[in-house]
Image 1 (spheres, rainbow, N blue to C red):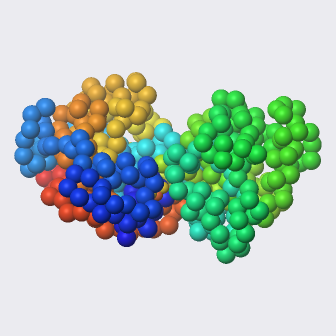
Image 2: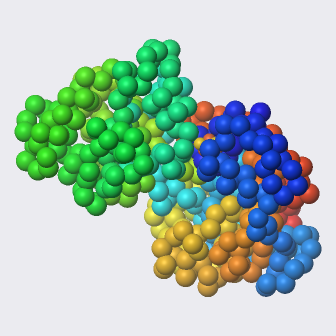
Image 3: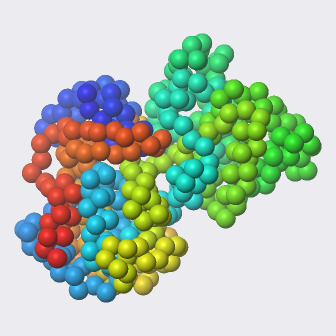
Length: 411
Ligand code: SF4
């Protein structure tokens, strides 16, 4: 058995046979996981400085030199690294007085912070399988982003208190701007919201829960949704990036909805984290600094976080940094143009197993083992459950943890 690190479900039941250059047999692997494992064989990086191939030692030495000479270094990525690598990364940030941030500052961070601080109740995915009778997918399409979510945990499986089939005992609600693959599966309870209309939709649900008629939206359907939520025994809301991008500074309203639902029945929340160990980084940072992301260690007492906030996040820090180390992430493809352009104009060190726009633009490229496939370690599943895994294949490449340790030693 092996563990798939293709998404934050971290499926531990994968059976796999690898042949040179391909996967010859796979059991329990979804199509997304298949693509993830296939990454072992495509577009691998080589150690490079200024576009020329060098030895690994030279690339590591150059990375250490850049970081040592930088006044405002930025360390970004982390959500596709093991807890062990993230721990070394946070220590590196402390040592060199860097800004450090992960992908959550651009996606699930606003919600994750409330979950980890205990402001919003949560549960495990095993609780979902055993007890949940209503799952609400809000601004997310797990059929594509987490393809085994419905079959392993939230809709199809039989659980301790959910022995009957999904048609009888589980209700799946989808709130989204478009009729996604998941919305097609749960089409009886698909609720369309206009782009940026989530806050208004949420206010309408609160109105219905208070026994009043909502002023906006399809009143009949909103009352139907209110009835489903009130009749629920154990409900779970799975908010995805679509909902969080739309809500932004109105997340208090979501907290209010969850609190209101819990006055009536039991409702928990699990963020639909994308990368396999984003939650791990957030939890580690919280334990060490009191903040889940976007922290500056610049100029403080040894190892102390000096400031925290959006200006220490990648979006703004990219514009005030004079060098950046990017690990397991492709911000030049994924982040807004202004941030990507700012990053492209400073010396970049990219630690990545595979080629990307960011590695192509980097001054220094350090090839790494694919975390979870060529390097073992531990990670936190989207619900916070700790999962340990072994590498599935041998590799001469160093793990993220080993590379970061060597850079620290060289500094
Ligand atoms: S659902 Fe996610 S973790 Fe599970 S096999 Fe698919 S990609 Fe891998």
